[in-house]
Amino acid sequence: MHDLDVRRLRVLRELSRHGTVTAAAQALHLTPSAVSQQLAALSREAGVPLIESAGRRVRLTNAAQILLRHADEIFARIELAQADIAASTGGGAAGQVALGGFAATLSGLALPALRSLRDTSPLLRLRLLEVEHPEALDLLVRGDLDIVLMVESRQGPPATDRRFHRQPLLTDVFDIALPAEHPAATSAVVSLADLAEDPWILPRAGACLDVSMATCAAAGFTPHVVHSIGDWDGVMTAVSLGLGVALVSRLASVAPRPGVVIRGLEVDRPARHITAVLRRGSERAPHLAAVLNELGTAARRLDRADLLNVPG
Image 1 (cartoon, rainbow, N blue to C red):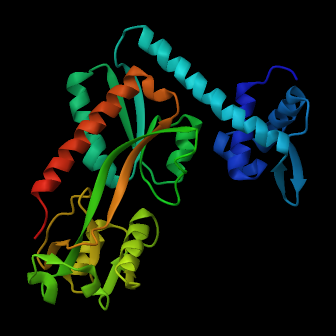
Image 2 (image 1 turned 135 degrees about the vertical axis):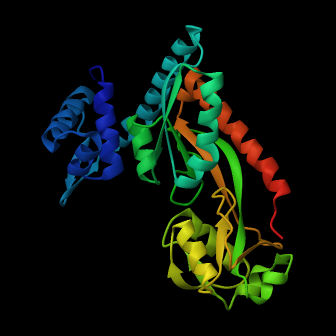
Image 3 (image 1 turned 30 degrees about the horizontal axis):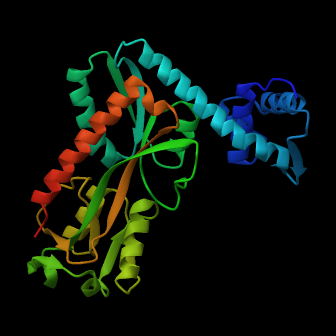
């Protein structure tokens, strides 16, 4: 076996993630021909075939799977080496950090962190990108993002995925939004089971839908979804018009409006867990550690605020 080219290992990993040479090429911003050439060269370096045809797709051989398991460790060690070198220079937090997340995490966590970092780390430049999973993790793996704010869900990578370092930040509680004329609107707190017969407004997909469906199931019913709306402003408008009830995120800081009453849930309080995800090993880099620290501060501030602002 010859020395393995790390860049070609990244090509193999993208092929494993996407399943076709064309999709891997798009993810890497290369041509399919270039990807095929890189894979052929990697096979020669490894001394064994790494891919085989499987209809219109290609399949990784057992040797390729073994190589990928080692590749994840190699990538993590490279990240760690770069972080340690940066820390050894003693220059503190400096440079650019690209952070991605969905809208609620940017407004509730990333923007407050950015504001604080302007004072504490003036040499640090934080660039924000609104992006959803799974694209966010693809950008993280490729190095186009340094930190991703995501919801732990069944669509995300498992906790055992050795490519990533996770830092839990916040448990985002959901409350119930009711039309002002709803019978439960006068209650201090609401039981979800009492809303089993109501029309519901839920997003079409994603972690919010998962949280809502799982919570309703735990309360003993499947919600009757009459409208699929993901935009919080649209959800609140629909509720204000009496078109249904909806779960709303505290992190999203949904603005109150006439015709809508927001109440806390009695027992079956739904929540989603917000986590910062980085490439494993990179979390020790001074500029990324500074951002993680400020994100943690912003999250703790929200936690304290939520204790004082429970609707009802």
